Image (tube, rainbow, N blue to C red; front, side, top):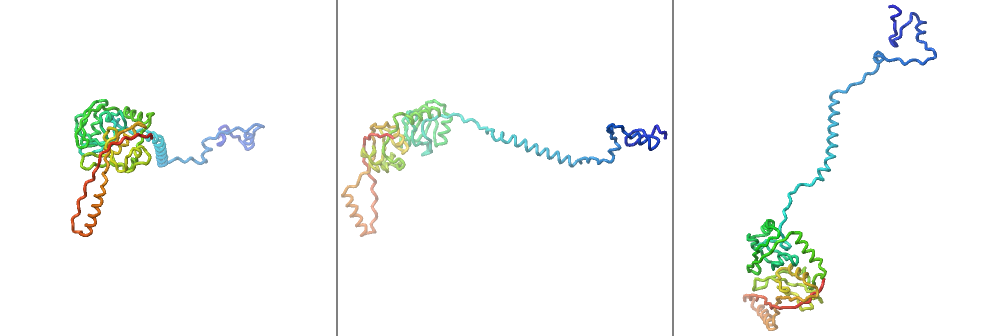
Amino acid sequence: MPSELRFCRNCGFRLGEGVAEYMETMRFDNARAPQLSVGPVALAGAKKRRRMSGMAWMFVGLLVFFVGAAAFTAMIAPHRQMAPAFTAPVPPRSFVGVNSFDTKEGGATFNNVEAPGLPSDKAGMVGGDIVTSFDGQPVHGEDEMMEILSRTPIGKTVEVVYLRDGETKTTKLTTMSKEENDRVIRAFKNRPEGKGQFGYDDGESERVAIPGTKIFGVKLNNVLQSRPADLAGIKKGDIVIEFDGIPIRTPEEFRARVQRALPYSTVKIVLMRPVAAAAGVADESRDAADDEEKDDEKPAKAEKPQKFEKLEISVKMGKQ
């Protein structure tokens, strides 16, 4: 091969004819050795980079997918919990000013009128009345009464048929909205005059029937000493049937009427008091007991019904 065509395989420079010339071509005179370009041949011995297999790429893809899904769920979960559940709006219903209704004797009754000036109060109704018809629609129980109120327009004047002491009565009342009902109750509770005080333990009073009548009253089982009722002469065991002209048929209604009475005003109480047995009757009872011990075969005598006397007592109310 001609000398002009001889080149180094490593650096690409032309080779000389002899060793000296070869060494001469490789000598550098006080110059920095040039950076030799490395060709494909120089990398032949280098370690080849290992390629990833298809399974490895699939694993990486699945890993990225699950991590992304977890991050996305963590981002939207709080918003999903915060989103309020959709509920259909409840249409406003009419109110008549009583605490609640209960099913009784084929109608709907209530315990008391909540405050003066409410529809039922203006209509003359009291706790214990049993509503049998409302706005021309029959009422057989609590659910039916509430359903009728939900259909009755607010502010409508309706006819109410109810039972009291076994007698059928009719009245008219005008319904009102919940906001107006609550406003009247709030004004009564915050009135500057305050609430009346009677002087009894309302937790121990009970609703009882008056023997021989269809009337119910409130029996006072604990009259507090030196309080208005005690000072007026009302005793334990008395049954209140009227408070300042208003029939009293439930303990809740009696408590409500006491609270609405103006402090230091005088009210008239109508009550039934058990009649005490006379001394002669007591002696006769003792003799009968002695005879019963002597002759056990005699049939027992039927107990006589308890007798009551009707009293009217004026009470000067106190203040709570």
